[in-house]
Picture 1 (tube, rainbow, N blue to C red):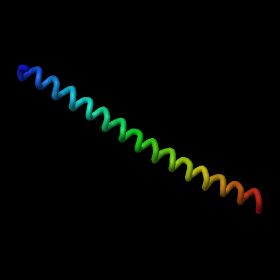
Picture 2: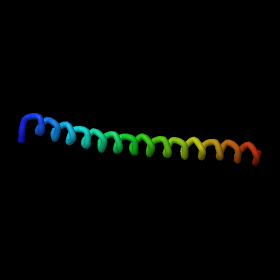
Picture 3: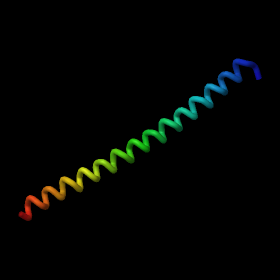
Picture 4: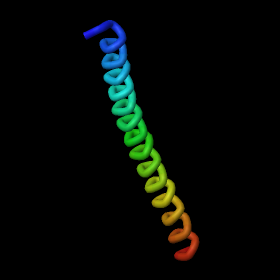
Length: 54
């Protein structure tokens, strides 16, 4: 393989690794966002329930 072919293959591998890293990061952020939304929802539901049952 020539140097140019090796560089292209290396660049493809780097791009693939970066795409995988971004996907994992996006899933992690989504997980935190869902968890935060659930917690806020539970707090809001508790406040509404307490308000209606006073």
